[in-house]
Image 1 (tube, rainbow, N blue to C red):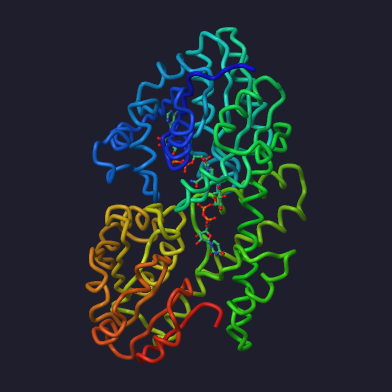
Image 2 (cartoon, rainbow, N blue to C red):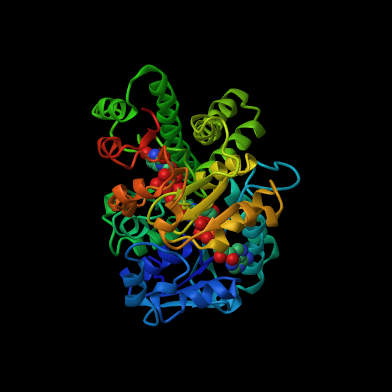
Length: 460
Ligand code: NAD
Ligand code: UDX
């Protein structure tokens, strides 16, 4: 078996950073270098103060502290790291295209292609190239073509090794994965990567497949997970008009071992950088092969999710006597889920956008998201001027400041700390009637009712 001594990962983001930190932690004899074009990001990974790491994940600071400087390095010298490596992971972003053919659906592979060209031009000896980014099925064929035709005549083996970690639980997911998936044609290369993971993952959880099954499985896993959320969210609307309670329905169906209890929590809508992007990608691929029924089927998962976000905002407006103009609405949470500072595709952004259209004054508190990021998210939508976003939205560092004199409080992220707030004090300080719209079903209805709130939760 080919022994791997040096690993390079291109892309020091939410996946590359944590994944390589754990690989280095568990393989102290392998030198792992994570490179990125973004100097600020690399500086943050190298910051002596572990509170300044660019990715917030519980437990990540301890992993970085253990391996950094020993066999884990962060650098912007991409060429040097490529040159030295036996194995190169590509973990760059693959966002939805915003231009040209496939705009709004297809994955934008420009960063992937740039990496392949750079690897090809720099490499002077044989390398194993690992797709860690989530990619459309058959991307490995394009990668192989670029590497083989622009390179220095060296031999490249391509593997697909999609990442299944979820943000907020990245370190535990990496330490204890349900499975590691490796797709490839060359058995020696596959076994070399199996060897890296076998340092801590039981062999029976390391699955090997052909390249195309591996690439496609990543899109399918995310599509199935998102589909469950949209399915329960569709039922939440039905619960609201029939007197059923969506948590009770989830519990009832989740006890069926064929259905299972996970991913049945109704919410204001799923967010994150993956679900929407990967389903759109799947839909685009299906359409490319003229599989219209398949594409239409999966597209509904997104349609329902958009509907869920819009109807949460609409319910706030309707309940508050059909006008929120000039009213202060406190947002608890902006991240797309708890325990992360990531806001990509967060439902909060779209709910805020609807309310701002109605000239509401939104005041946001999130324990991990900066004001700069919140304004960036709103500006990116292009719904109104940057000045108007700053006029209508205030970001505060103290939750009680958000809530004082608010006409309504909306819970957008399920941060644990929100549960332990002094809700009696909040009731006193809010305008009356004190409306609470719980998009995460986080709070205790009995407690809120007893305190005299007008409490609305999804699916009740
Ligand atoms: P990210 O945007 O956080 O990080 C990507 C990094 O790649 C950026 O820092 C960027 O500067 C860098 N980069 C881009 N082009 C480069 C180049 N040519 N050379 C050097 N650096 C370059 O993205 P992410 O969330 O880490 O996602 C990366 C991939 O992993 C995506 O394909 C995504 O779909 C997939 N994925 C993400 C998650 C997740 O939870 N975020 C989970 C599984 C899979
Ligand atoms: C997802 C996949 O879970 C992970 O395997 C993949 O590698 C990347 O995409 P992530 O997006 O980080 O991970 O978080 P996840 O826990 O899947 O949550 C996604 C969204 O769905 C969040 O907004 C979350 O709040 C929402 N969600 C999840 C629900 O609304 N209800 C649920 O029951 C579960």
